[in-house]
Length: 82
Image 1 (cartoon, one colour):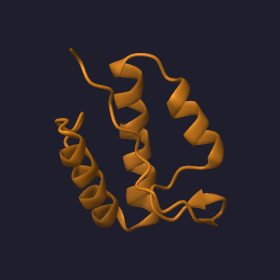
Image 2 (cartoon, rainbow, N blue to C red):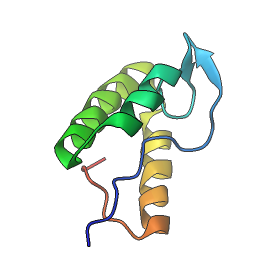
Image 3 (cartoon, rainbow, N blue to C red):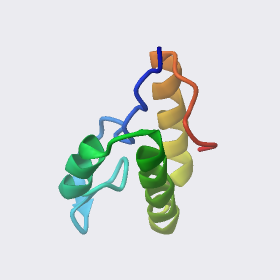
Image 4 (tube, rainbow, N blue to C red):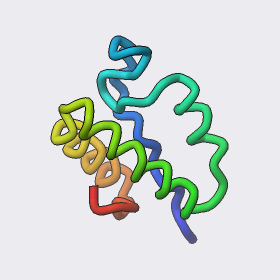
């Protein structure tokens, strides 16, 4: 059985950076869009784009650490080399 890809949200949810969350760099629209993505490839593509945004905004290392922790807690291999 394949497990769901964990969403990029790391449960900070404070929208201060131009309406982007300070934890995951997603907007509220991005959060809804990720949930609607069908298939692993679509979700991985979304994560790759989000990582690019996160690196531009800074604090990528913090997000990466928390996302990998989230995957480990759920017993899921990270879908990307975060």
